[in-house]
Amino acid sequence: MNKILLVALLSVVVSCENKKPSSQKVDSSKVYTYDFQSDSIHPIDVSAYYSNEEFKLEKQLIPINKEEFDKDSADFTNNFISKPDLLEDRDSLALPYGTIKFIKRKQRDRDDFTDYRYMGFAPNLDSHLLSIDLYDGSYTLILNDKLYTYGVVDGEPIFSLDNKNFATFRNDEGHSSSLTLYAISEQSFSFEKFLWSDEHLIESVFWNSENKLVISLLAIESGATTYYKINI
Image 1 (cartoon, one colour):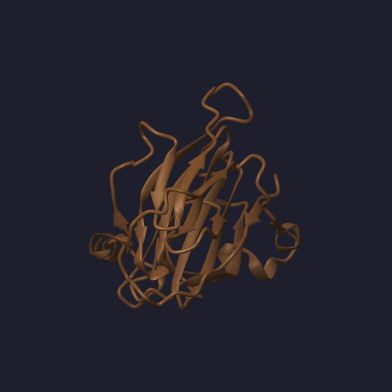
Image 2 (tube, helix red, strand yellow; image 1 turned 90 degrees about the horizontal axis):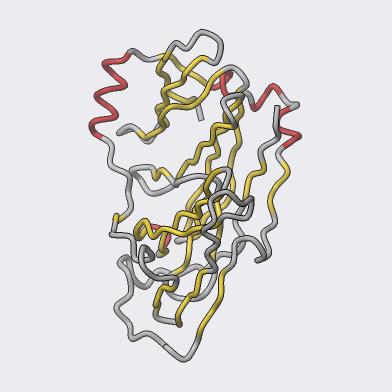
C-alpha cells in the first residue's frame, strides 16, 4: 500500500478583523511568486499511523441507514463562499498586500503538471481557497487575505457547521483511503487526527447538524456502499 503524506499547516495568521474578503486597495508594488513544485513544503510522514490499528477508519464507524444519510446530506452546505475561477484565464491574484503570481505547468503528460483553480473564500479562516491540480491528484492552498501566509492540505476542505473543524479525504489509486481532521481556532487551523483504511474507499464526507462527520464508503472487495457516522 502506498503511504500517503499529509501536508500540514505551513503558516498561520491570527486575524479577527473581517469575516468577508477584504475590499482594501491592492498594494500593486509587491509581487509574490508561488510555485507548488519548488516552494518549501514540510509534509508529515503518516507511515506510523498505518502501522497503528488505533487509527484505522473502521474502528471509528457507527452504522446509519441510507435514509438518515440522505437527509443529512440534503441539509449540508459546505461553509465557504464559492466564487468563479479567478485564475481561469490568468496566472495571478490581486490581494490587499500585493499580487500573487502562480507558476503553472500545463503539460498534462508531465509529472510536474501543475495548475491552479480559485475555489472561493473561507470566512472562518479569513482565507482564499485555491485548488492545486497535479498529475496524480490535488491539494488545496489556503491563502490568507491579510498577509502573505498560507497552508496546504491534502484534498478539498469540508467545513463543519459550527466552524470549529474541517476534514479532507483522499483515495489512493483504488487501494486505500484516508481521512484527515483539522481544528480551527481564531481563523487559523492545525492538524488534529488522521484515519486510514485498506478495506474501503471514501465516496463522500460531510457534517450533520450535530457537527458529526457522516461518510459513505465503498468496499474494495465487494463493491458494496455503506453509510456511517464517525466517532470522533
